[in-house]
Length: 55
Image 1 (cartoon, rainbow, N blue to C red):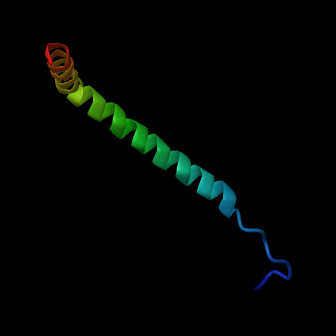
Image 2 (cartoon, rainbow, N blue to C red):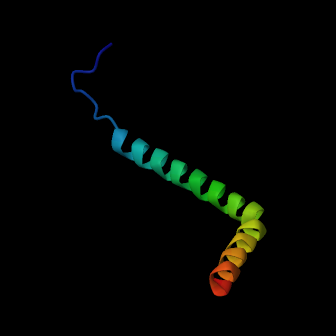
């Protein structure tokens, strides 16, 4: 049985939730990567700083 009135689609809310989930996933990936590589990145910047000071 078809309804005589077309029901509005709730696409806008679903899209907003999808974007929020993607943003949260990206934030988690960035946090995990920063935690895992934090020491190495610090060492790289220290080496660059030392090279610039000694140049």
